[in-house]
Every structure is written in C-alpha cells, then in structure tokens.
Image (tube, rainbow, N blue to C red):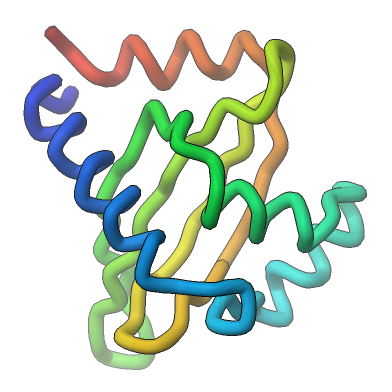
Length: 119
C-alpha cells in the first residue's frame, strides 16, 4: 500500500517530467513494439497520452535488476476514455523517455489501482 500523499506527489512529478519531452524523444523498446502490435495499440496513442493527457491517476516507482545494475522504471496509469485506461511502463532518461511496455486495460482494473493507494 502507498500513502495517498506520496502517490499524488509522484504523479505530480511525472506529469511535470513529461513536459520535458517531445514526440521525437519518446522511444519504444523492441519488446514494446512487439506488444503494441500484438495488442493493436498505436504508437501515436502512447505519445499523445504521455505528452497531452493529464488524467494520470496511478504511478509507481520500480527498481528492476538489469545486467548487474538497477534500472528505475515508472508504471503509470492514465485514463484514456470512460471505458479504458492505459498502463505505460517507462524509463525517464535525460534526453529520452524509453517506453518498456504498454497495456490497455478495462475500467474494472481502474478500481484495483485506486484501491492500491490508501487514504
């Protein structure tokens, strides 16, 4: 469980960080490109969500072991319609935002994310 204040602060920081990037600085890993194709999700939806969508309602910092080091990734969940949310897992680097994975999810998943952030 996360404290509500911590979650809101991380969301604020990530929305602010998103403003430092433009569409040319958002890159997709080969893994992500494969998953986008399998799931029928357009890259343009991901880019516009990151750059324009302020309806980010969940964020989580993750440390992932990678080649003997640790990579800091952020799992973000954006509301993209009344029915769907978009989970974007990305690495915020100095000049690029590297998108690792993307999942389009239903409204029922939104309830689970909101419950994870405790009051």
